[in-house]
Length: 259
Image (cartoon, rainbow, N blue to C red; front, side):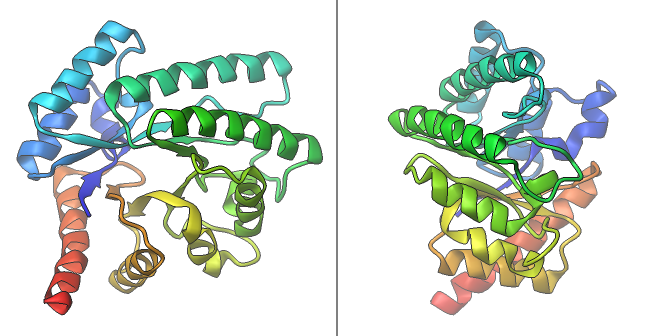
């Protein structure tokens, strides 16, 4: 099991122009000594294939695997059919980017209204169709794809579990933003979605107790992917380093018990 850092953690300095994707790769490899990257799509400056291949070389040169490509702003559902079709084409472009980069997982936001508690029947059926399409492509190319509990109905564990059960595809996974749940069963959300978890974001707001219990629960459900630190509102190098140390402490505790 590897520790990594979601590149969104450095969004403030990326937006300020003091870090680019290559600075991120340098940071996680040589500042923190990690072997796994986790990219937010907007950390990269371009979707042009030549540029993406340079980023791929950057990963290889530093001996880094890519645990995830986290795609935002291209919601699968939009009420406007024209925007839906545009976002579908953008998702396909990002799947191609993930394949070039060798990403092990790709997260795709479902969409819907921020204040909604569930999807309409039309939305739900559309999600099932699209996610199955994307999951088949992922399966054929050796990675997994799926939603994240980010906003709106995605925050409802019952809704997300029902969606995963309906899609029912081996190429489907779930990006668990640990503890980011709302509504009924919010306290059970991590456990309810555990069978589908392909990747995990660990916000720095988690207490030590919640962090340890959640990681242990996922391990007991068979999770063997990366543990990705995320400074939700953008962190300093020190804040990110401290969260990495907290995750590594849990992993070291497991190693000591297993000896």
